[in-house]
Image 1 (cartoon, one colour):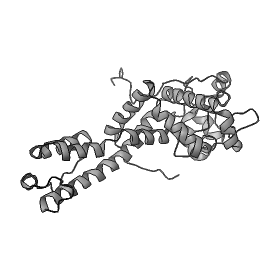
Image 2 (cartoon, one colour):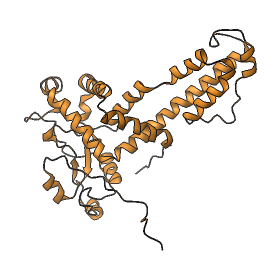
Image 3 (tube, one colour):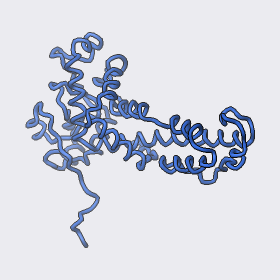
Length: 285
């Protein structure tokens, strides 16, 4: 199996994940409503037929689109900040957003100060052109960092199973409240009981991803399932929010359980925040 290695910006990802959690639990429904509308009209089928780009990826994308202040910040610098403070304001923006431009030539701030143009974005003098080019470079690094930050935030939230439970319970409320419309739009996604159809099997990438996240352990009893997983092609991958409770097949609604816990859990939305520390803090050998 090919292992993909990807750079993640955890510095900004942690901050992004914190904002998302704060927004979600502070009852700010606007962005979640945007997600529901996107699912309603465009992408509901992924809740039945799981895709690598999950519903949580969609939510993070919408969140970033709604709270991206790049253009506002740059416009503020160019139109509200005094020329003599450009360098300080731009350096502060780079620092706050983790943008490292070491080795790149800075704008000619001294001649920007001398330039009499009131619109530096349209001015063709050497100093203003250098300033515009530098801001474009900052923009490219900012949005490149956004992609890495979004990936990092997704990994952080994907490991927060209590959040995933709450997220999918709220998503289940949307499905329940709009059930007739959704069945009419996406009849192939629902079964005879008016719930999202259960998948007959899990694709290998889903199986591997859930096993890797849950460390091949039952998330409730913490039983080691390594041997069972090596011999059973169909492990007990469980829906955190049950399909009977309007849960979905999205990978972010899945967890690994032993057979006993899977049977006992039934339709309850049960999960834990247990994990394995890198080392025992009490160990000193």
